[in-house]
Image 1 (cartoon, one colour):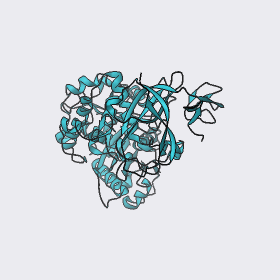
Image 2: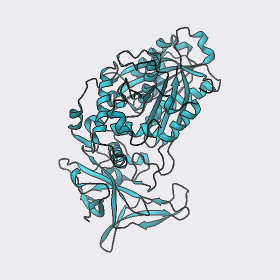
Image 3: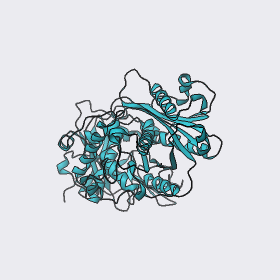
Image 4: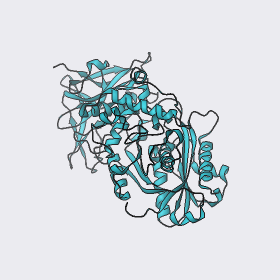
Length: 127
Length: 385
């Protein structure tokens, strides 16, 4: 399975797919379309989207599969960010304070260094 | 009512839910089977077939070591949260086919403490999904209800009212796990597990078992002690494209209806009854929001109408639409293999008028049950006196 994100012109972008046959949108990218079996073309998503919904993770997920930080667990937030014309994609949020999160707010994709590995996360984008 | 039902529940048994050190899941299952047999007034030797299963507690068919190796066909079912529903639908179809006249279904489980541990590879998901901390069922429930509350104007108070009712009903249910009533304040001010859900708004994996004896109409003449409750329909469905389910790295812009919608509609259609006919309801309440959402998805209320339903007490034991009269998953915990049959047990007891302190008043005639689970499965039943 390929990484779910890439760097394009200095910015972090999510990588999904679109079925060449039925045009279904996919995230994460797969070789074949689960809807029709067709071949899937790689699609690079927009830098920004809007927060469709969110919640918090108040306890440490069981490890494995969770990759621990090696430090005391700090609750984090996760959410689905809507990319128009594509899908709503799930990921960790850099902001975990519920009072600073609201449905519809602008979010951008960023890299997140955690536990010795790099993944993606969504960060409030102001405006 | 439409077509004459052919299959009846004639025995119902339950092993207390909760935590039982030193008791295996299989032993709890056998206990529930013996209780159901005694309730029906039949012997294990009279049972022609059985379906049963658990998620984490072993193979149901090995229960014959305790119940008696009579040589009966005993089919193991393992279908996640739909294990009980799948066993039931399979047993009902076997009876409807005419191959058998009397059988048993049993569901049991015993899970380790804490949230479920799941491996992304078992769910066709990439490793990073689990490593990043996204492979947690509670996140789905929190995220889904957060959006639902936004779309339908539901306040956090309604979530707390669901939990308050659950623990009040649990306090009147001898086999329930959590039997101490909690105030709205205690529920709302508890630590948040998955915003907006506090720890009292989410059920815990647990232990327990439930069993039913089912028979065809013709067999009733041989069961003088039976108080039959008719299974008017059972429906079992899985998800369609673009539904929003547990462990979804992405969700479509146009979300398709949940399998709950399909299963409930089919159950009512086959029963020849509608949501308005129902006197007592058990729906999957993995957390408070799920109860609210499932009531609407099953057609038992409009989306958004839950605020008034709970504020007015309509879903209380003595209300217009009694919901989860035994305290549901919130008060009983979630032994995955047992929950679906616990719901049917509760409806059977209510329709017979044998629910004691928690009895729904005025002689309920029609009951409805609904389970939902990962990765998008739902089973519903309609029962009547």
